[in-house]
Length: 308
Image (tube, rainbow, N blue to C red; front, top):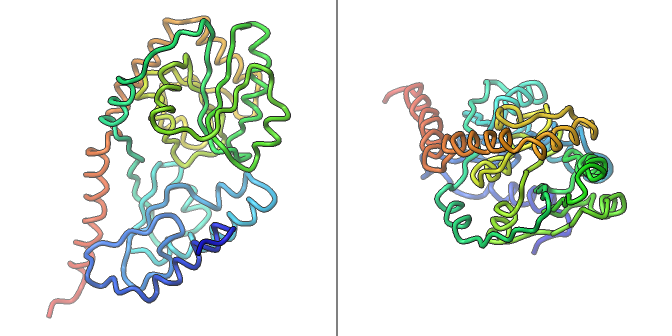
């Protein structure tokens, strides 16, 4: 039975792993904090550095993330090899966890075939409005409130503006209180519904100041949308072609979005760059890279073992 606190479920799951016989597997991968209790050599694949994320949160969210980060630190210290999703995350792992080895970088992936199928089935619905889309969990580090302020400023010059917000999270009540009238909260959507939102938007914006990678950037790139992000964490690394605003600066974010609204040639150029760049993250290509790195750890361990 699951408990009301997800962290407790994860700890219980990992403790039960102590009693699992995994010796017959050539490769075992533990994601984030999962794997710290394993009794066999494994790889720690860190999707988002919990100790880094916790630094941007507060209250119970922060306390639970800090608790999980202790287990994540233990996981990377016990792992045979560490894989991070970005150079930014790799640096933060080194700085915050002091692991025995430097993480290797293998980015997140996107199933382009699946997304292209979804996009091709979407019926475009011209609205006559300039639609900004954001997709995020509602944590403080995502800075959705900065986007709300930026959109409120932008709406003075772009009266047909609409902000569509996909996601849920602990900050939702606070965000709804400060949202301007042009903001629409859509909640959690199916893949088909999300594809429709991407296709019917004019611009994608991710105001987050802490992203271990930012897979929604890949989704926006696959959809052929111009992107506004902020000059922080992994966003400039994943989407170097995007217009980058200053972090925690609603005016800078508003100016970047206004620039893409007023300069459709620039917007189209950024969108096209994204379509080309996202192929580097296609699932088969990234999966092969992950397996190469993972298999390398197994081969190295075998070579280091004494021969009988």
